[in-house]
Each structure stands twice: as C-alpha cells, then as structure tokens.
Image (cartoon, rainbow, N blue to C red; front, side, top):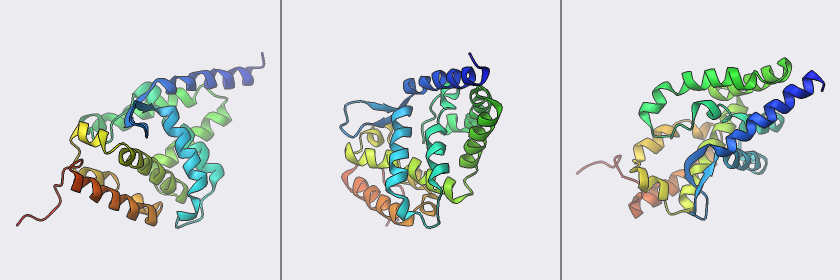
Length: 201
C-alpha cells in the first residue's frame, strides 16, 4: 500500500476511538449520554446552520474540520467535564501530548494542518475559533435545556460556573449567548441550576 494512504487510513481508524469517549451531556431524549463523535457531528451541523449569527465573517472550510477534530485529543486525554476544576488543571498538558501523537499519525502536511487547527481553536483568537467555541459551549447547554437540566442537576452546577465557562461565548455569536442566558435563568427558576449570583438581601 502507498505509505501516504496507509497513514491516512491509520488515522481514520484511530479516530474511530472517539466514538467510545463518553461525555456528561445527555442526548435530547435524556435516555443516555452522548459520545465525542456525536458531539462533534452536531457542532459541524450547527456550524452550517448558525453561521449568520457570527458577528464576523467566518470560513466554514476551517470551522467544520476544526469542530470535527477538536476533541480527538480526548482519545488519549479523556473527556474533562466542563466544571471539573481538578481535571481542568492538567487538561492542556494532557491534550497537548495527545495532539502531538494523534495528529502525528497522518502524513506530515495533513498532520500539521489538523494540529494547527486544533491550536487555533485552543487559542480562541480568530473569528473561526470564537465561532467554534460558541458552538462547543452552546450545544451542551441546548441539550441540557431539552432534558430538563439532567446533567446540571446531577453535578450540582452553579450559575456562576456556567457564566465563567461562557464568559467569551458572546464573541462567537452575541444573539445566541443572549438566548443561552434566557435558558439559564429559566433553569435557575426551576431549581436545576444553583443560583449563586443573585444579590442577597
């Protein structure tokens, strides 16, 4: 077999492992939790449909591969739950090592391309990275809303935690962040999210 094709197929098979990385977010029907592959596919679909809400012009030919590959590092590093402070402390180090290995399976030009996309996503500076982060942060929130806050209730999530995680989400789509805030407030009222941000009398 051609060496280039072999490396590409090796990577494709390696990427299959992401289907086994389970997340803390439930599917919209609440019957089970989603895996990383399902999450990434959902983001790619959202990227196409919600582009009009990005405040800056975004290149979908960058955004779509960016969201499809951004969680491949979790094959080695595992999924770090959004509100896991302990896991978050070592997340970047674990994921950097994973990125070097996993994207390194590919032919050098493609490996470098995907590694650079991953780094761009992590840096959170370009319009494409900001838009991709908005998708990555809003998708689990929309699923939490669909499931009546199951995951938030399970983990005792506080409003301040959601706001801290989403402190820059508005940069990727202000209108969507406004809608997300409305949903958060609804779940605070329902008792699914702990309100630790209201002023005490």
